Image 1 (cartoon, rainbow, N blue to C red):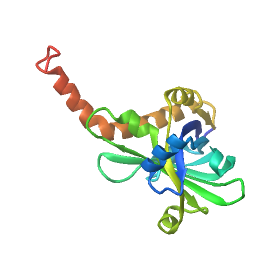
Image 2 (cartoon, one colour):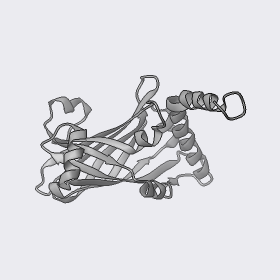
Image 3 (cartoon, helix red, strand yellow):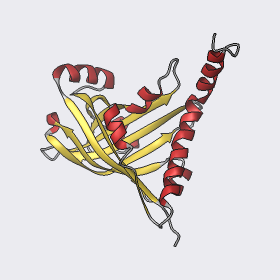
Image 4 (tube, rainbow, N blue to C red):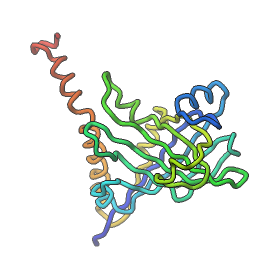
Length: 218
C-alpha cells in the first residue's frame, strides 16, 4: 500500500505579554513585571511529509488553544498555520505562527509570531529556535492584513527545556504501514539541514579555531 505519510507533534510555549503594547520586548518586560502570562498548546500537523518538505512555504496546520487570563483564559485555536524555516535571505530563516482565536467575550483575535533564526556571534541556536516574538491583532487577519490591523498586545513566549524534551516524545506519523520511520527521518533531515544552512559555517569556523595547531590549544 502506498500513499502520503502524515506527521504531527505537540508544542507548548509560555511567556508574558502586555495589552495595548506594540513592541514584543517591551510587552514581555512589562508583562513579566505585572504577571500577565500567555501560553499556547498546539498540535502541528502535515498530511504529507514529502509535500511539506518540497513546499517553499513549509506550511502545516496548527490547532489547540491559547491561554491568557487577560483575554479570558483558555481560548481554542482554529485553522492555525505554522511555517517551518521560511525565507530567502542567506543565513536567516523564520518559523512563523498564525493562530486565529476569540477571547472570552467573543472578539476575534489573531496571535502572529515569529522565531528569528540567524547566526549571531556566540552559540545562539537554542535561543533563536525557542523564542517567539508575538503580537496579537484584532480580528482574524492574514499576513497581508497585518499592516492595517490594530495591535491588541505584544510579548515574547519561549519553549522551556522540560517542555522541549516532552515535545520530542509527541511526534507521531500516520499513513501506510512501514512509512512511519521514513517520515520521521525525512522531517529530521529537513530540520537539521536547515539548521546547518544557518549555523554550519560558524560551527565549522569555531571547530577550526578551537583545534588550533592540532593539540587542542588556540
